[in-house]
Amino acid sequence: MKHGFKQSGTVFVLLPAVCLLLSVPAAAADRLIIRADQGKETIAPEVYGHFAEHLGRCIYEGFWVGEDSEIPNIGGIRTDVVEALRKLQIPVLRWPGGCFADEYHWKEGIGPRPKRPSMVNTHWGMVTETNAFGTHEFLHLCEMLDCEAYIAGNVGSGTVEEMQDWVEYMTFDGVSEMADLRRANGREQPWKIKYFGVGNENWGCGGNMTPEYYSDLYKRYATYVRNYSGNRLLKIACGPGGVDYHWMEVVMKNCHRHMDAIAQHYYVRGTGTWGHNQKGSATQFDEKEWFALMKNTLEVDEVIRRVKGIMDKYDSRKRVALYVDEWGTWWDGEPGSHPGFLYQQNTLRDALSAAIFLNVFNDHCDRVKMGNIAQTVNVLQAMILTKDDQMIVTPTYHVFEMYKHHQGATMLPAELTCEDYAFDRQTIPGLHASASKRTDGAVIVSLCNLNPNRPAPLECTLDGFQAAGAEGRVLTAETMQAHNTFDKPDTVKPAALKDIQVKDGKVHVTLPARSVAVLTITEKAD
Ligand code: AHR
Image (cartoon, rainbow, N blue to C red; front, side):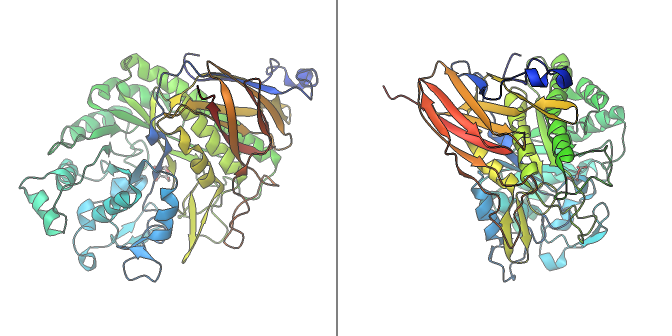
């Protein structure tokens, strides 16, 4: 493998039932060799990005409570949520969808709020969308979070003119109808917008198009997504969901010269196939479903490898980036919640899945330049859940907080040899890992112990690095199903990793069963 990790179980992976007993002696430590002197690629901070859609209670209640709310807010945006998210150092936020993007008409979401027309959110529950949260509110939120804005434009039901106007409205500092309208709405200076998506899931909710038809539309719409007043937009084409390699092939072939990035969506769950029903409970599951989620999540590595192979054919210089701009777990909605709102709980299992995803993105950072977990608040694999004025953070939030040290660091290749995790005559590697070197010289190692039953002693060797000190934090809980609730908000939270020591330049650590850990390893001072 050119970059990144060799993740492997025992040499007996293909014959697990026969050989497991013979594989690694019980006391043997798993081993990780980090090539600390061979890092080349930077992990783009945007890999740790987020996504907020007008869906269920993500925007309304999650972010937006309105200026008159008793819930503390700044300009209508709740401060508790912003404060919690700032601790994650969110680099980029994608909005307004999702499927909502291709039925959103931005001009309905500007101007005095009482005068804004309402619409029906036909994709997500047929509820009334008041348009109280629009362009100005979103860009204010990005300023509060200190993150880049990623706007998803409407190809499915919008016009080219509408898309062009939106960009002009946000970014032009001269005199024009759109720039003057922005000023009339209270914003003198244009915003800097970095990312603009030309449609979303146009193979499905964004218009049910063929890749050939979308390619033509992409080029037409993207032509008029202009750079005004020194603002440089990166244009993002709609890529596939799941494993539709044909879509990727056709759109790359036809459009690669006209795009800066192409999007990939990848959702996972425990068992079953894609579809909108019976995805399994977020909290009521057994080891079979735990194992299935770990296995399904690990498969994203192979999917990205194949997508990169297609991209390499048309763009061998890697000018076009891959953005996994929707990813995460997708379960049945919480009992009693609106089925169109996608409100789900979030357990330690979700945390492990997120950590594997992020390790894989780090590993492919030569091409994967952005990731946006779905979604930030109250929807799917959320960081935050709210109930009226209460707010809790989820196990997945803690993974993002622990992993933030990888943002902007140099990815380090490494090889992992570990005992398999076997269940029901199937096996997967018991551990998963990623390493990087921070700009201050510290090595960051993120580790997942996928096995819910076995603590894993691990020995880390760092080539070209004199390890002198190591500390770590770990996220685990007594059960696989552990999660935070409004009554018990701290059931799953990180703790200091006690079992860690440096001996003869090697780092020895024991990872608790079903855990995510992040180590910071420092070198001897000269
Ligand atoms: O994140 C929820 C939905 O999943 C998005 O709206 C859509 O793009 C995807 O199918």
